Image 1 (cartoon, rainbow, N blue to C red):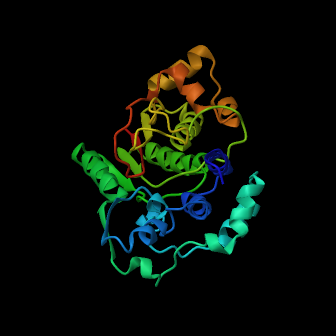
Image 2: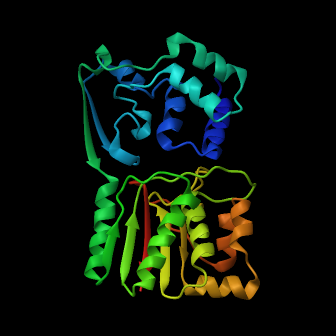
Length: 290
């Protein structure tokens, strides 16, 4: 399997709406280092110590960086089932690789792990807890939804908008904080990522409501799968956003249908541009009702 073919598989997975755990099942079975294979390659040479920063929901070691030094409970059959489930367009070389029993990943009990240890240094929950503390110190009542949220970005945004509108109707001063990793099923040809799409969906749902602002971003500084250092980390919305939408006639629904959140927020001036942060503890989303 060539590098270009693996890139094609990755792009197809990113557009499919598959959660990160399922994406990694496919990627682990198309690699010489993922799924415990790095531990196998090094087992005779040295003791292996892994120090990891979690960027996945639930902090599963086998999902972090696709688990190069830990056992993989998933199988080639699981990977093939996901290719079928999401109707992924993959080259014949990829299909042959997923059919080849010699490409099975390393399972629990494999001697590759006899001298391997794993330690988690940082978790997404720590960043969400820190955000909750900042909000509480600023006098907000907090609704903490956890660090492990998954789901379609626009659907999660609709749930969170309902929470925000309820708080607004009750006259509360609230911060709604969540982490995790949302997904986007790409049907259009625009640019963006799950955090920008979440913010775009919120913009459409909250545009007529005063006193609400929101931020959604990836803590690594790049939202989506393009991997460019110039990618937005996410987007911010507030009353200025809503005024700009009205002034220049921007319809969030049209941009949402085309999965073009970047194009939308480039016009309102609300892209969050941090550059690479050089770490990754998943996403953070905050809605302030004031």
